[in-house]
Length: 221
Image (tube, rainbow, N blue to C red; front, side, top):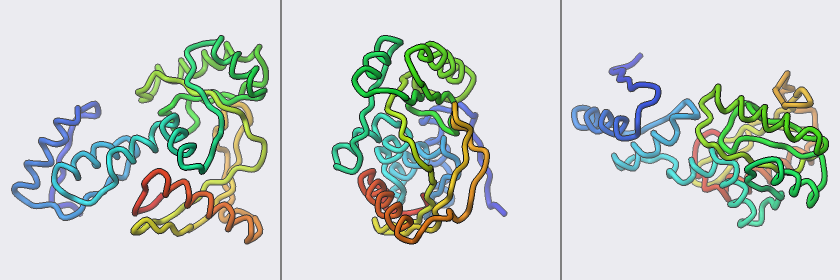
């Protein structure tokens, strides 16, 4: 299936990725690049920049991986103004709760798969939520130490599969999601989501505006 397989260690620095890519490109020029794992997107973007290939810009990858950066971009673009704050401890979360009310959601800024995420119903649950997020960061590949708090929104949740080309976004599917209620771990999906066409169009329009604000130009989302 492959003309070459070249590996780097799991924790390889970006310079090593570029060294391997330059050597390969010199002997067997590369026309396109793809990345199929979330944690390799930034390396693929750097390689594409180095070799003059088409890929997402590095700042696009950062804005998608980092929830605080994503929130800032969406607010600046007028797409979504959800209040949020980077917090250092209990007092910061208490202040946010007093200003915005409960329940809240606490999460690592660069986490995935609901790791470290907690719903906070009141002040009494803050300590446990902080313990949960810190233990999760210590046992996974969550790289950033920052923690984000924001209001909890009541309602149904959907994920949206898209494909983009030239900055035009096409919704492929809207998926209904089922989760447990404290840490939001997914327990099931309904494909496609059983929603009216008008709701599906509204979801698609909103998601397309998010992709545009984040600078996504092509590929699956």
